[in-house]
Amino acid sequence: MIELPKECIVDKFIPKKIFYEKVSLSSNLKQEFVDKIDKIYWKYKISEDTLNISKTENVEEIEIFELTLKEKVNCQNIIKVITKNIPYIILFEICYKDEVQYAIKHNDDIYFTNWNEKIEFNFNGIDLNAVYENIIRSVTNISEQNNNIDEELEKGKKLKEVQKEIERLENKMKSEKQFNKKVELNKNILELKKQKEELSNNE
Image (cartoon, rainbow, N blue to C red; front, side, top):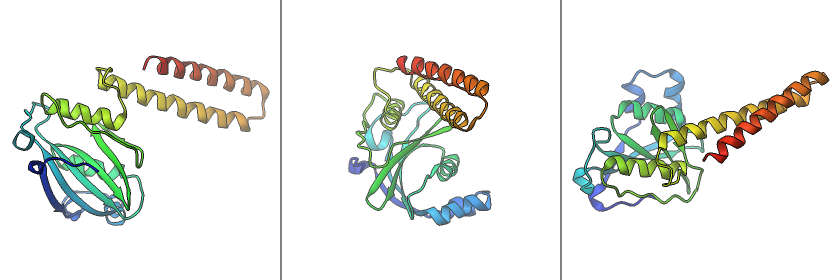
């Protein structure tokens, strides 16, 4: 669990109805808030005032929210709603009973740690943008040796897409009856595996 100096503590309960009553949401999304989320807490604020770290044009402050769940589910849709309506960077600490995972939105994507993955957050930096980059690295396991975070994240997305397509074609090949189609599918799979290997070697 995250622990920051007392100057950063907010510890404020946020009624979840703020998000599903005052914002235009589909009935399904509203139901997700009702069914999946128990409580939302604003735990910490990292800013010039609290940690004496300079803000930047892109990052004025960083919030840490705790989402306690009624059941162990994916919170992607809920996080999209919350981040859309709060104009600051938010690191989410997602709790279900004794289990914890973390999530953060970067550009238009939301990145999650595994449940109960041991994460060492570094909340130090020359400015808040550096702190934000440290958080992204911790959540996504990007090494400090890789300078371009966006490039590494894009590479990771591409790897997942290639792996998903490999699995799709392998399943299709298993059920294919025609020999010539099996050969063509196998050729495509081998090309994708080569592409995956090249991407992995460039990490």
